[in-house]
Length: 203
Image 1 (cartoon, rainbow, N blue to C red):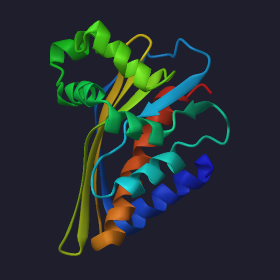
Image 2 (spheres, helix red, strand yellow):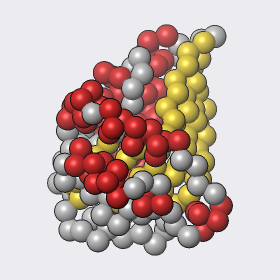
Image 3 (cartoon, rainbow, N blue to C red):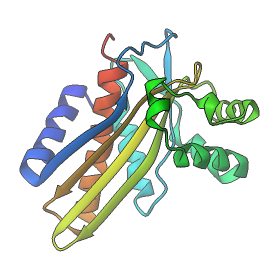
């Protein structure tokens, strides 16, 4: 899917089906990747829409312009299934809340993880130099509406730097399975807009 088509589809969903809201908690405006080739590892969302959200991430974050590559999400699922330690490390990052003082000094993975934990995280992402981590991903359908809230962090795995911590909330005038699918795709597509703005701005 081309980026223009994705942007148009997101706007159509946004303006014809729902009320849109977005808030950015933290963005390192001065961040520049220190590597020439970007490989993105995406921690999958584990919920009842897991199969669809996996497909949404794969479609939305595919890059026809070859500006970056993604580590296969199915491989990360295997790490989740086979390594309790990996799951504990991911959960440790998800549960971490940064103070205002930490955000002012640009937090990093080293302040949360021990060296062996960071090494295991990198090992299970097999060469990825960026990590997209869903902190919250909630989709709820009721009373002819579907509500969604998602929060994502993006880390540089080489420097450990937090690049951004962003959140979005929406509601669509659809319910049931159809509403949940629209919402899941929208949340994933909107997360991509932050990735494109902050990482691909000079590509």
